Amino acid sequence: MEGVVKLFSNFFALITPEVLLIMPIFMIIGMIIGALPGLTATMGVAILTGLTFSISTQNTFVILMAVYIGAVYGGSISAILINIPGTGAAAATLLDGHPLALKGQAGQTIGMAAAASTIGTTMGIVALAIFAPQITQIALSFTSPEFFLLALWGITICGSISVPDIPLKGWMMGLFGLFISFIGLDKIYGYSRFTFDNSNLLGGVSFIPSMIGLFGIPEVITILKEKKHIDFKGKIGKIIPRFREFITHSKLIIRSGIIGVWIGAIPGAGEDVAAFVSYGIAKKTHKKGKLFGTGVMEGVIAAETANNACIGGALIPLLTLGIPGSPPAAVLLGAFLLHNIVPGPMLNIDHPNLISQMSAITLLGSIFLGICSLALAKPISKVLLIPPVVFMPIVAVLCTIGSYAINLNTFDLTVMLIFGVIGYFLREMGYPGAPLVLGIILGPMADENLRRTLIVSNGSILPFFTRPISIIFIIIIVLTLLSQSESFKAFKSRVWEKFLSSIGLRKNNQ
Image 1 (cartoon, rainbow, N blue to C red):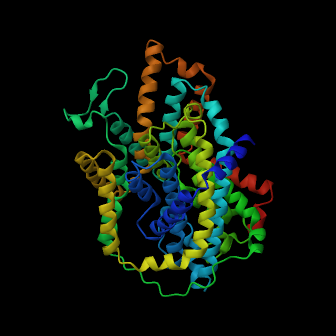
Image 2: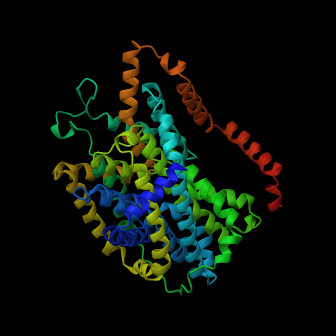
């Protein structure tokens, strides 16, 4: 309860004219970014991170969280109206959202998506305020072996989730990210590694420019190459949902919110995974499950509650362990480092108020999401009519400005372009970007702590197998790897079916 008290204390301290002006402006910008196909929450946060270097820490995260929250919801607008998900997080929403729009319920569906997103975001905040301080206390007992295994598990599970059918692709990208993280000066002995005598690489690869290139440039190229023309002429109608609908769907909303927080706390999983997992479970357990995909409001609620609840969940490992739970949270990590804040177990000691402050910022964002989404859904839907050939060049310019503004170094533009080309070809070949990002982030943690452990133990690996927390991590990593085998998946499916039958949920679909 102490975390909740601090949350509200920081919330009321946050309410200033400056914040109340900034938050709705960037919430709307985030919704527009999310609504426009191809502009993702990750790209929006990455671009703006590069432009907030000279802004105060509080206002920086007010801006970034407003864009993050708004973009995750905004993707549902285009998903419902034109059957194109504005973001990956809205891909599950269109399965039932667009059929509902074709039935003449576009306004009701957008309104319900907005309400579900607001509730989901709030549930994520509560989880962040309650659990983050507890996890931080546990993490203070971590030493080098635990941090190495934690980093290894993060890359392992991210690779498994990002490409469920071919986990090897995810793991390859994680290892590629690890290699990139080794570029620069070795932090233990000070040797230069893989710099090729280029002084610009002594400090390593610039994180924000690389993220802008990885997520921004491929989107620009893809959208301009496909030359999609969006044509929406339908009527939206009434948007504000009725209160009794929340009561009717309360169980579904609570369950989807819990799923979203849980998926968000898994390193690298992200909002799109949370939406599909929640949608899949709702389809299996709800009495209307067989109708999902034909235009059922419950499908939209399940997806939208989970993907926004994932935001608070993704901040939990980011703030407590220094490991982001989603791609946008990975870019937020770069923003923290840009402002000389190092997330992790020492965060509560170095910045004792930051977790509560981030919770308060997200709570305020949730409130403005509810207001802006219901009041401005119709005007924002008109943005979908802007031709891609007009707005994508603008995005390319913002990518360039955002990359250069951090260090005022032209080499960062080279980094952005290189990662943009890499990101484009990886996307064309079906390789995910999230494990690559996590590899870059977790590489230094894995490298330094592995070597530090071996130095202290004179080359012995026994510390990894004699410490209780290390043993737990090893078991988790092994189970994560085994979970990708076909026999394990079949076993898991049988156990899941028996569990559903035992609690009476499977009967609903029969």
